Amino acid sequence: MARVLTPRAEDFPRWYQDVIAKAQLADNGPVRGTMVIRPTGYAIWERMQAEMDDRIKAAGAENAYFPLFIPESYLRREAEHVEGFSPELAVVTHGGGKQLAEPVVVRPTSETVIGEFMAKWVDSYRDLPLLLNQWANVVRWELRPRIFLRTSEFLWQEGHTAHATDADARAYARKILHEVYEDFMVGVLGIPVLVGRKTAGERFAGATNTYTLEGMMGDGKALQMGTSHELGQNFARAFDITYSSATGGQEHAWTTSWGTSTRMLGGLIMCHGDDNGLRVPPRLAPIQAYVMIVKDGDGVGEAAAKLRDALRDAGVRVGFDDRVDTPFGRRAVDAELKGYPVRVEVGPRDLAAGNAVVVRRTDGSKTPVAVPDVVSRVLAALEADQQTLHDQALALRESRTVEVSTLADAIEASSTGWARVPWSQVGSAGEAEANGKGVTVRCLVRADGSVPDSEDEPDLVAVLARAY
Image (cartoon, rainbow, N blue to C red; front, side, top):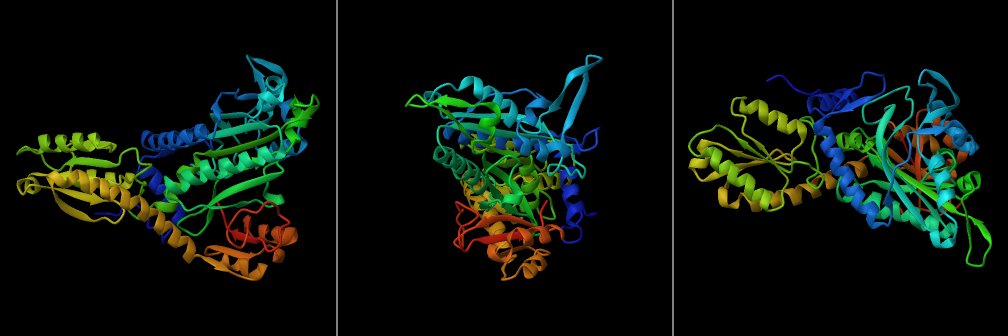
């Protein structure tokens, strides 16, 4: 049979595009840089949303919705913010057949419009903290689009909070970083993200500090999976977000913002995928077990339906394939491409022996299992394979991360993976030199891997890589 996908080792970017197309995850939209997320891809995004939303709400934030259109003047109130986003803005100048009195921006992010309403809603220290999140789309005009990774319109969640003190804002930005983002990415996506602090040159426009979560992809490049920002009082001053303190004085609030997006779908593909397609971690998978009728007859359909129901009763998310008019080989390849963690294949021959075949996507193993034992075997496989995917990704990162002592060595090592180098050997001048060669400082960490409180701490380590 002709190969379905370009091998990863032969052409990783082509393989990535092949997976998106063949696994029916997404398509290019009619306007350059846009995408259509197909049902298979959107089902994964819905699972991401559900897992993230639970964690965001557990952290105390409430969901709200703010407008897609933002007055251009709002962005101009925070100079660094508008400067950072100007090249990416989509601006509407006409509506209803007439030129608008003031151009409106299609939101690239919502700090400005949310800041406007925070100023209205916050009056007293009793109104703080104000913890908001929205699930929405944003537009950043992209010159070099790539589905999921960089598109002119994408889906995301963006959190925005206001606090009475700098310490409270910092603590909350870190709470989101670790208890929401890191917990989800490691525990559900199975991606062992590196958590660190962005350099001043890599910070979010208008932030005083940006934290990041970086994942290593299958080709050794880095992908920024999410960020959490301390905004200081920059936006509070620009939008007059003030509150009366317990002592009666007027104070500016301290704000944060944080976000993740459909970029995580790209990370999922490139971190866990193999030459047979997508491999979806069981805790994330919309379909965890896919029950397939190989060939009907001799009670196969009834046995398969009973297995489906038993798995569902055990809490497994189940798909069911009884399309016996389509060749089984084609259906099996399709299931592999879409990355279903476990397949349960039921056919006349195996059923006559009292078995069904359990196929694990992670390692490709095919095991005849007595029908009464299928549910327990599937549950065990799902738990084990979640860990396996994480461990494989961690092993790759460790094998392709090197310790070096000079900037030159770090830049060279970034051609095949990540490099750890003393930040004192890089600095802002070295960072600019690396950027000129397509290499970026992904983040700063302490020697023990923890997140620093300041860029000025001694003995910090810079992690350099080429990135998406």
